[in-house]
Image (tube, rainbow, N blue to C red; front, side, top):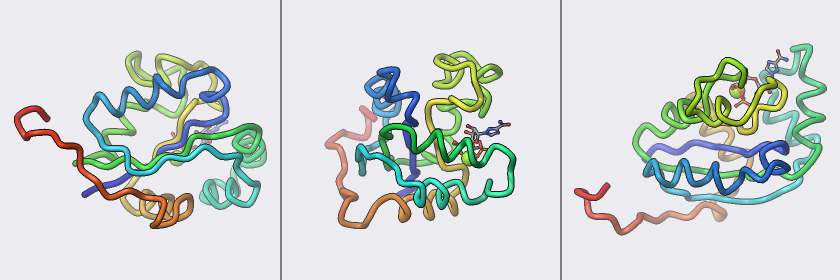
Length: 148
Ligand code: RTP
Ligand code: MG
């Protein structure tokens, strides 16, 4: 079953959006299989955003992600990687569609509330960077197919 890595960034936590954000993925019908609340180290932040290492915004991105606690999550379900990116919305909250998390709650590209893996390879990489196998729970909600 497909899995993706999502992280509520320090601004989402500071603004009290954790419950609202988790609710959107729960009610959509995806399954939570990993969850932790942590202060991110500089090493983890640099590794996570390694693809952007040469970009001018890299130092401020790392500084921001390490500036306060983050909610790290793994969600499971058919098509969850692309669907989560849709639920999250465009990178710049100013142009993100209303109805998306970034479109509903943000205005600043450097404060865009939540991260989501952008492809199967990055999802795989990010899940194993942030979680050990033992921290992921293999379970299925007891829903009958006609309810789901
Ligand atoms: P994320 O990785 O955090 O889910 O965001 P994303 O895929 O939508 O965007 P990405 O291109 O991966 O950029 C990573 C984060 O870098 C910040 N950024 N700032 N100042 C800028 O022009 C700029 N561009 C990107 C954003 O906070 C973005 O989430
Ligand atoms: Mg990205």
